[in-house]
Amino acid sequence: MLFTVFGAAFGLQLAFDNGSTKLWDTVNRGRQWKDIKQRYMEAAEEDEE
Image (tube, rainbow, N blue to C red; front, side, top):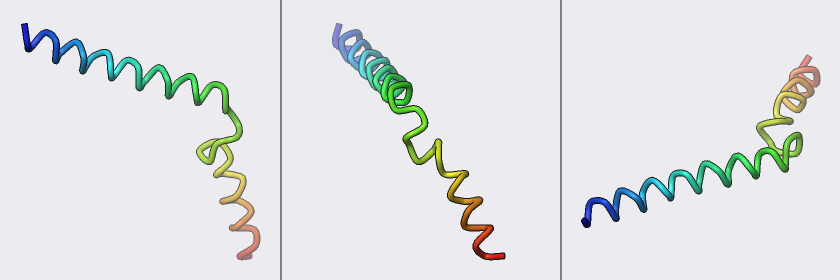
């Protein structure tokens, strides 16, 4: 019984965390560092030349 409760809690936590992360990434697409990093990396390389 105890293992079932802990297993369910762990599974629900993983599902909630992954779901909320996906929702956050979808709502904020194009505004996060992982989305715009390439533009700044290219600009920094051009400034060095």
